Every structure is written in C-alpha cells, then in structure tokens.
Image (cartoon, rainbow, N blue to C red; front, side, top):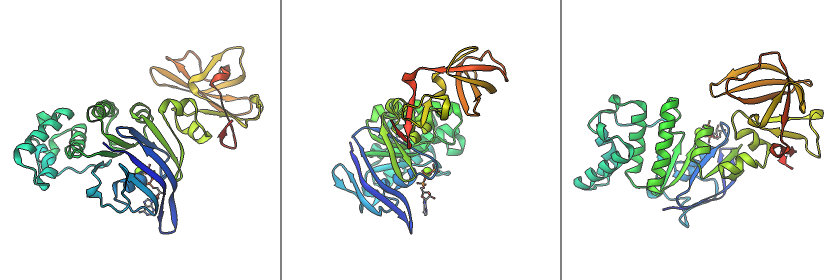
Length: 331
Ligand SMILES: Nc1ncnc2c1ncn2[C@@H]1O[C@H](COP(=O)(O)OP(=O)(O)OP(=O)(O)O)[C@@H](O)[C@H]1O
Ligand SMILES: [Mg+2]
C-alpha cells in the first residue's frame, strides 16, 4: 500500500534543467500512466522516484515520509525497464528466486512464493527452462515476476512492452490490468502507446518539456483537453486543428475536431475538401483531405470507405465535438 507525492520536483543535469517543477499526487492502488513526447522527462521522473537519480530540488514523499535521500533498496519499490536482463545461465525458477535468496528467505517460503508468482503470470510450465528457451512475451513475464515476487509497495514500469509484437502487447496489456486488480499495488507506468495509456490508466499524467500539461482520467483527457498540446497528443490519429476562415471563430484561434467526429457528404457541409489519400486499416479507413485553403484534415470512416482519391466531399461535424483554443489554451 503506498501513496506517492511529488512536490515542486526539479532536476538539472549540470546547467540543463529537464524537470521544471512537477507536482503529482498518486493515491494508494492507483494505476498512473506517464505520457509525453521523447525527451519530456518521463524516465527521469521515474528514476527519481526509484532513487536511481538525485532530486535537484523539491520533495518526494512515499506514505507521508520524505524519500529524497533514502537509498533505492529501502524504498520498497520495484522497477521494470524496457530492456529487462534475465540471468541467462539460470532457470526461470532461479531467476525468480534470486532476490529472495539474497534476502536469505528460507527455501520452502521461496518455493511457495515462486509458485504463486508463476501462477499469476502463467509461467509455471516454464520454471525449469532457461531464458533463451522462452518467447519474448514469456521472458517479459519473468522480468515482471522478478519485480512482483519482492512484494513491493510500488511498481515502476518504463515502457515494459515496447519490444513485443502487437499480439503479445495486447495479451500483456490484459495481464497487467488483471495483475493490478489482483495485487492492488500502486503502479506508475511510462508508455508511448496510446492504447496502453487509455486502457490501463486510472489517471494519465501528460508531460511536456519537463512540466505537467494535465493530469486527468483517460476519458477527461480525451473529452476535455485543457491545452492544444494535450488535445494533439491524446488520440490517434491526432486531432485536426482548423484555422482561418473555414471555421466560425467566436474568439478562438483554433478549432479542434477529432477524425472520428467528422462526417462526409457529396454535396453539403461546413468545409469543401478534396480526398487526397486513403489508408484502409481494415475495420476503418483514414481519409486524408485537403480544404480549399490547403489545410490538411484527417477523417476516420468506418469500414472500407466508398470514395476514391480526387473526389470532392463536404465535411461536417457537431459543434458539441469541437474543441476551441486560444494561445494554446482551451476557451
Ligand atoms: N544523464 C543525463 N545527462 C544529461 N541529460 C540527460 C540525462 N538523462 C536524460 N537527460 C535529458 O533529460 C531530458 C529528459 O530525458 P528522459 O529520458 O527523462 O526523457 P523521456 O521522456 O523518458 O524520453 P523517451 O520517451 O525518449 O524515453 C532529455 O532532454 C534528455 O536528453
Ligand atoms: Mg524514457
């Protein structure tokens, strides 16, 4: 059980400031996902929470206790990195048991705990194998198992699924969600993957250039992004930002409309466009359109799509689905 609080956290590497005053509160048992562009400071924040990186200024509290100068081994948290290294010459059992052996836990308890973890992660059939005899996803589960077996208060995951194929990723995503339910542990999880962020998170922290842009539930971030940055970052394909005369301005500089909220008609609608390019994704098709004033607009169409490159189409959307921004902020 653990609550984590970051207060005005800063991080400088020599002269360069990379975390510029971050406040985040994570409640006990929450699954919190950090997202943001490359270099925005996600791994640095995670490493500071783990104790692998000094905190330049600010306060890190776990369960009401200041942690700034507490060594990593005393923080009761487990970190799983993108590149997990298993001991290649040890069986899965010994990989899982290693930390407990070091901690001088007795043999029968080790066996019990390894079996329990193997059960949760469905790797009990592979306990006698070496890592090289496992698939990527199985290895990934062993790496997660090594973290779980220590029964930490907090799990820190830094893009743990990024080197798995799409099918394994979705399997592991489901397993992680189930694991979170079973263990009711506090989890902080860094990812670039929109689906992982939207499906796993109780709340998402959007980072931009060392600062928090917004902290909210996935649904709130999707429906009510507070800044143009968040609007463009959450959602795939990304939100369309329309400017100029093609929209009624009413004080806003930018109109944001998601590709899935635009409808098409052959003869009437708000914006006249030419269909420039199509991408058929199977269940839906992306239309890349161009307005008469050369703005690029993406439209998501269900199914295969019934139009051809070069066709003229009119776009329409419900005003309720429009996000308006001025100076980068929602209005
Ligand atoms: N040891 C270091 N020395 C100097 N600068 C560093 C160091 N580690 C990270 N940085 C810089 O800090 C910034 C944040 O890096 P960080 O690794 O936290 O980004 P990230 O959000 O995890 O990015 P990615 O999505 O690419 O993993 C980057 O500009 C990076 O170059
Ligand atoms: Mg990183």
